[in-house]
Structure formats: structure tokens, C-alpha cells
Length: 307
Image (cartoon, rainbow, N blue to C red; front, side, top):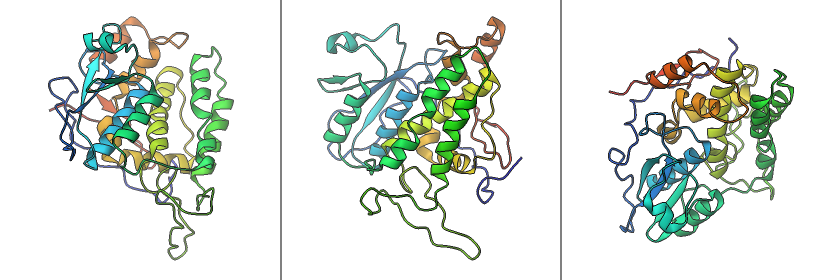
């Protein structure tokens, strides 16, 4: 298969993360304020215990983990069946996942959760100001949703959206709206025979709120489109694959990413999407968790087995 960037090596698979359950997850982080841990409720998987596949739940999980790694808060993850919400949901008027409860505060709207975390626990380097990045990432997920629900096999509009994202990701210098460089943006030093290289992530060399929103959606696109529509993301999109490679080597993304089987079943269970046979659905639900963390340099699926 074709190369990506300068043929980076595949990431070394991390040891399997423990199954996320209310009892096994425990409290993450050692926030300096002490106080009560933030509780985040995420979609449960097919076994009712492990983390299910929801790009919005993973987004909040990533934000919490980044802030916890900076010592800003403590949190715990509780896997939840959306059809059987816990009693505290009713007490706080919560209806949707992901949901966040901290003390007597409760939120189940994404924007409200992010705003609360940034106001109550500021920091972590997640803020960004990059209209070009916002523009480059605004269409691909809606195109994916339309494609996976459509009865035809025409992926033209999805391909166009991914090409636009790839063009942005291959820019050697990321423009900043005020000519300043933020979020680690820089002009990478040139090596002999090489031009400037783009930063690792959308707005620089560290994860921002935009990456936490975009990367889970890209993983869903990659896994579900292949499983349900036999769609492969083109290997010539070098910027795209370089970006995913950066995610696949980042502990925050690896730690929060649901397995391929959960992603496949999440989209299979949505209205108007291609359906698997009952036998195949049952088989997928029982498989050992595997994670598509490969890039087209050496394509191979990384299988992580719980110890």
C-alpha cells in the first residue's frame, strides 16, 4: 500500500485498558482542589458494562482525561444503558448521554458540559481560535451520515469532504486568524531535502477541543463505513492518515476509543443503515475487542485482548 508522510512506524499496541464499569473504572486524576469527582455517564456496550460507541461520549471522556492529566480534576466514568437511566438522572432532569454530574450540577447537552468543564476547571490547553480548522472539518461527518444511510453506493460527496480535510491537514504552515501562532502552531524547521511539516493536530502540536470532537467521528467513519458499506478511506490522503497516526499514538485517544465491534453495532442499530444478519450481529458482539489503529504504511488491525 502507499506511504503516509515519511513512513512512520505503526504504534506499539498499549496493554488492554480495563473494561469500563462503575466499579472497575475508579476515579481518574488527582485534582488539586480535592472535592467530589466529576461523574460522566457514557453509553454502555453490548454487554451492558464496557464502554459503547458514541463519538459524543468519547469526546467528553477525552476532555476529562486531558484535564485530569493536568491535575485539574478527578472524574469517574459510569457506563449506562440509555433505556434504563439511573435514578440521579430523574432527580436532575437528565435524559441524554453523555451526561455529567458534579455535586448538585447536572448537564446532558454537549455544549453545556464543555462550558461547565472549561469554566469550573479551566486549563489543559484545549482552547483554540482557528476558523480555517473549523471550516475544514465542518462537512465530513454529515456526509458520512448521509452516505451510510443512503441506499446507493455513491461516495462522491464523502470523498470530496475527506479530500478537503486532507488538503487542510497537508498545509505546511497552519494560518492563524491574527497572524499569531497558537496551540503550538509553528513553522516546522526544515530538514535537508525536506520542506516544512504540518503540526500533528488540527490547530497545533497538542490536542484541542476541536480534535476531541473530530477524532472520534473520524474513527466511526473509518470503522463503520468499512464494516457496513465496504468503504475504504483512500490511501493517497496522506495528511488524513498522518493525523490519524498521531491520534493512534496518543494515550488519551487510545484510552478512550471504543472497540471496532461497538462502533459497527452502534451504526448497525441506527435507523436506515445497512443491516447485518442476526447470526453475524451475535458473532460480532461476542468477539474479542479489536481496534483499527493501523495506517496504510503497514496495514494490519491491532487486536487488544483483555488480560
